[in-house]
Image (cartoon, rainbow, N blue to C red; front, side):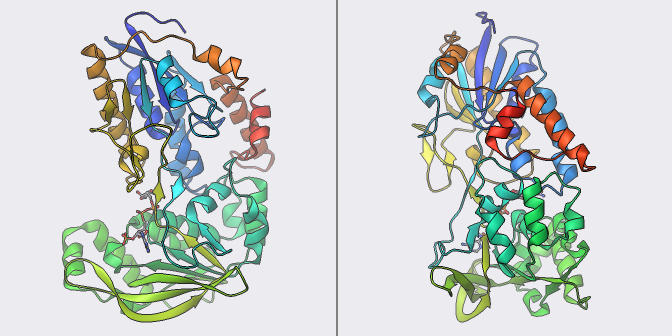
Length: 452
Ligand code: NAP
């Protein structure tokens, strides 16, 4: 790619929504300063959490891929997949990357789980939602032990009442027929068809007004083909702070309304029971067979009048052979990036780390918001970059040597054509079973499909 003195070369690290939105905004500029963008991802495929986070049965949300895909066709934009940056597995360090470009935007998201910090958290059978989601979406680095482990599970507890908890509960509760139209890899569909979790308990440590799920997602739990949703009316007795939250927020009011309707419903005798609990926090994962979880000790909580909920000392145990910790994602540092370890985010001033280096998306602000939130966040980083380029603060022009460097290191880079070949292969696999797509989960198979 040619480098003119008026065209800045930018590396965007992470091909999820925030990276693609940032690349789009930079490449779309028709006035100076202008930009050429390399979107670099450690995986051979783009889309980040749209591919590996959004639930496979949420086709309408996943369809944002079509919009994001178009960014790869913009003149001046390249995709460089299969290029891990930094850390022990990196093929190039953060500093080497900086040296190859006029600017870098870090948009690599938050891929790790937050911890509960309670005894028993590491017992076999206790898993992070992030790992389970990675497995059922066909992430190449997924922990494949789920395939042998899930079919023997019957009683699940999911900790947390956010949208990821709802996704996990729904996927575990769906019938094979409900999952069949998704793009989940065949081994995932087979494993879930063999899995017969009868009891699913979802735990909220505060009252129902404070759950962070959205109403549309919550409602779907009541529409499952073979699962009864159970809510204890006693969990829906509200304190004054919850009442005023409901009065002031339609989303909260709707959520509680949905729960109230369920609390009056008679169970239909469905194969699975999905129980939503509020005002309980896990205090220990109980060990049953040596090294394995057999239950979750929970403690009742109550509002303390200051807006917080505290343990009451009243405990009980919910039996469980699968515990899914769904209490949020966190980002991890890359090399020498200034990192806020408490929040799992990169330090920045509204997206500017320093002139020439920027950040956006979950790695900037933490795991919150909907996909569209990342557009605004990405535009913030782009505005800062454009301002710095205009003010002459970028070390322009940087040497155009990334391709040579990666070739010297023997990296099999997946470019846009390679991704398109993977896309075709996945669509063909899907067509063979009458669905739109089947995700290829194996890393080697992805590279082979890309023609590498
Ligand atoms: P989240 O919305 O932050 O929910 C985390 C949940 O974990 C909260 O209920 C939180 O309770 C609870 N929690 C945290 N620490 C806990 C602890 N020590 N013990 C017990 N509970 C604890 O996070 P998420 O569900 O991972 O979702 C991440 C983001 O992705 C959100 O913005 C979400 O909306 C989005 N997302 C959207 C969709 C969709 O639109 N369909 C799907 C998936 C994800 P407290 O509130 O009490 O802290």
